[in-house]
Image (cartoon, rainbow, N blue to C red; front, side, top):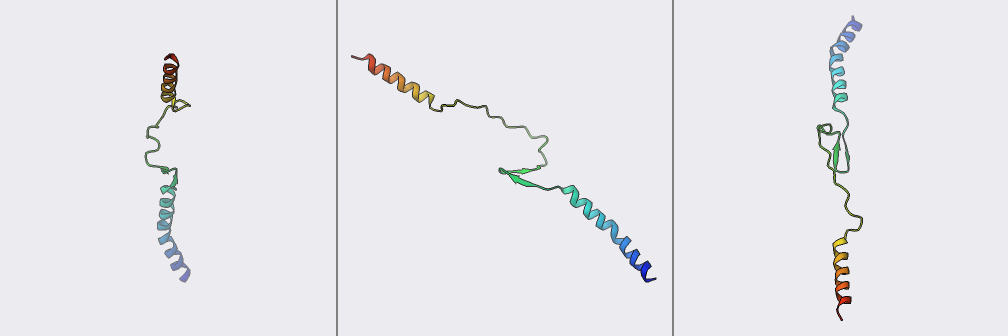
Length: 77
């Protein structure tokens, strides 16, 4: 009799335990990488930000202005 009550109690709690384990498995793990929470709920539909590479030498306009100033100075007598 005692065993029957014990098994009844175990079987009564079993669906709740299985449900909690399944629920915790479905939530997934989130990690913060580079300020971005992954996996985000929108990571499959997010558009990718693309920034084209710029010039290697960032001061090209300034260098051109200096060359023009030097050329102008050397042209004057």
